[in-house]
Image 1 (cartoon, rainbow, N blue to C red):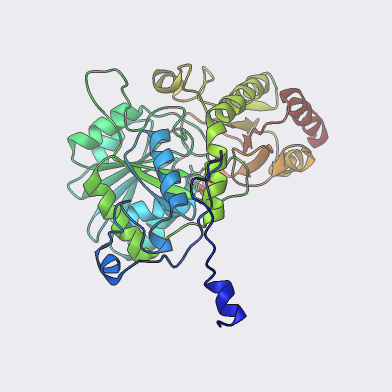
Image 2: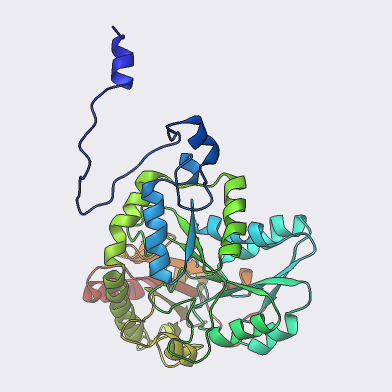
Length: 401
Ligand SMILES: *Cc1c(COP(=O)(O)O)cnc(C)c1O
């Protein structure tokens, strides 16, 4: 007779196969079994042909990877523990000592910090370019430029670049193009098909996304993805991913799988509310500028129109306001503190509206000429009723003076 503990571990019962239900199963594993030594020696982990170890994928992560490829129009995907890890993995997989990487000056801040820290220490140089000026990018490309980051819209200031032109310039110079696609999320535009229906096929080489934002949609998951269309480039990233030991938790992967079916609906609901609020903010005397690419006066509005202004396109849930210069930092801080529905907090694309004051002086190498001088506050619009959010901003404006 086997002992109880052994019987509980090696239990003979097997549930019938064929279970079928709406939600994908959560497969949790570090260890994965092999039926024979021969299987152990021959199984391949670099593609999705088999299972070898939890780190290299389970049915749950494979399913999520495939759905994310569909979302962004890519062919291969790796999952990482955060959006920032996706940005870092791209750099580590592609760049080597002596290479240069170009980053837009309005990029997601930690992307620049990585370049100034680890990349510089490893002999990888970087330069910042003005994403709103393709000529500036062209002038900064050199034979050492291995990769160029693009981001649309820009972080915090939300300028929308001429993405097809930037990508075309990089291709002409033989540099890889990596996009931080967190804002577009695979909905606003198709990163691998920037000219849908056109004669020319044009797209980025790599799309990194913070799944933390729209794909999760709950403000409760940290995850990132790196998507490609070129098998050789994917393999390079996948090998680096394996060497670094990156993986994601099964429960988190399942949370994103559960949220994905509603991503397009959520994107549009956030979009509609954000445009309504941003438009209303334009009528408020306290704000000298409202930054949102769908607003006519916002930097790069024409570029946004060309790429995203379609029934199945759109804009994300972010807009920023620049306070009139006579407001002190203390007054703007008091405005943020007085908000009740907009919570102070980082991240976005969850149900709760958020607000963050930013000091642009510390974030840019030069003050962008298209941004008015003054303290900048970024709103992330959640799924609350627009009228309530507007009333919240109204009462906070009264409270600050
Ligand atoms: C949030 C964000 C990231 C990083 O995502 P985390 O999951 O928070 O690490 C990267 N890029 C952009 C544009 C983001 O907004």
